[in-house]
Length: 135
Image 1 (cartoon, helix red, strand yellow):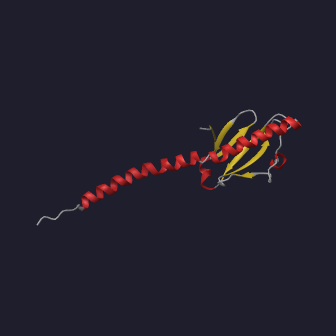
Image 2 (cartoon, rainbow, N blue to C red; image 1 turned 135 degrees about the vertical axis):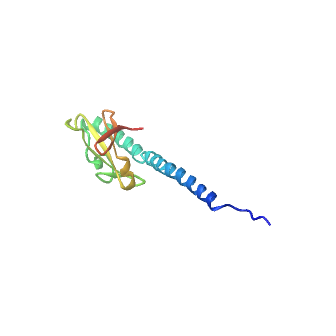
Image 3 (cartoon, rainbow, N blue to C red; image 1 turned 135 degrees about the horizontal axis):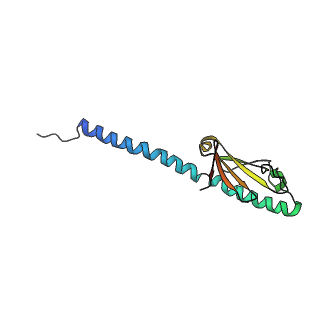
């Protein structure tokens, strides 16, 4: 009578192969999810910037308080609560020339950095001391 089955060595080889594949795939998947979750901030930032341009057309200045644009709070927490969006003057430029929207990443999304959009068309992602383009 011949017994059929897997040996311990065969099982250990299979476990090792699965472990190697998982150690590569899981971090890549996590990065992909974080990148795709940027849409949670990009869409509302575009809407806020449109409201800023309408506000500028009427008042010849931009607003740092989102309440001035019709929102219920001074900052906006995105729908999935991955970002908090606020408005501020661009660097050394006055509000009559430029406004900058900053989406501050929350919780695990913080590993992807903060998103910045300004009225001059700049779109950046800041992570630590480094600055990257949106992609």
